[in-house]
Length: 113
Image 1 (cartoon, helix red, strand yellow):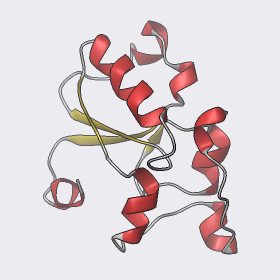
Image 2 (cartoon, helix red, strand yellow):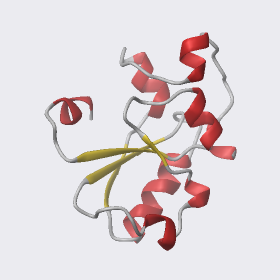
Image 3 (cartoon, rainbow, N blue to C red):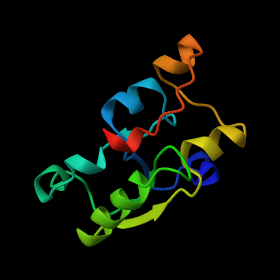
């Protein structure tokens, strides 16, 4: 995904966790769409042209799967970022948000909110 973004491909990164988890830390450029808020109405303004890549906290979280299924069911092209935010950071990629600036690390799963 990092390469696709760097190459300027038409990719939209979707954070399926709670808004609070997104505010604490997220992949730069990601859009917050909590999986619990997804409906036909909330997706109406999104273009079906790009590839959407859904992510969550990591292996112990299923918000990316729930987000991907809801987007796919609505007719969007979607993939899931396996390993989520956890593996993104382990691979040395940057993040942004309040927790990054404050150097606070929250071990709770963000999919519950």
